Length: 98
Image 1: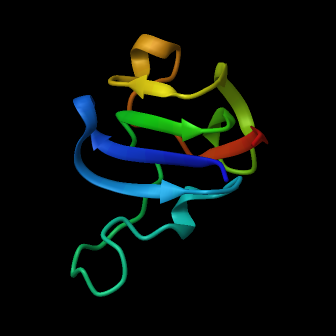
Image 2: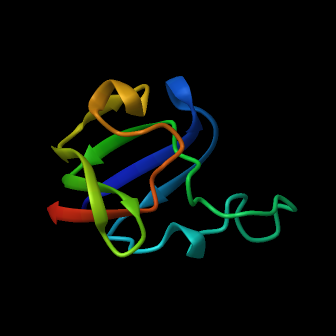
């Protein structure tokens, strides 16, 4: 099973969420999770991420528009800008392969 973990801060800090499949619109993902009392969504919030498994594409806009960073595989990505992805600018991701 593919897994991607997004973080709001560089170096894997702050709030995080796990994705297991392509996600076309980060505005549909609650930032704090159900019942957390933290409002907002994940649109334009990601500063670092971990690809646990699978290969993923990253997009600046919803519905997989304006690819950034190419296709990336398992690893630690401590700051999005180091990998060709604008900071706090992700709006969708696509799972390319498990």
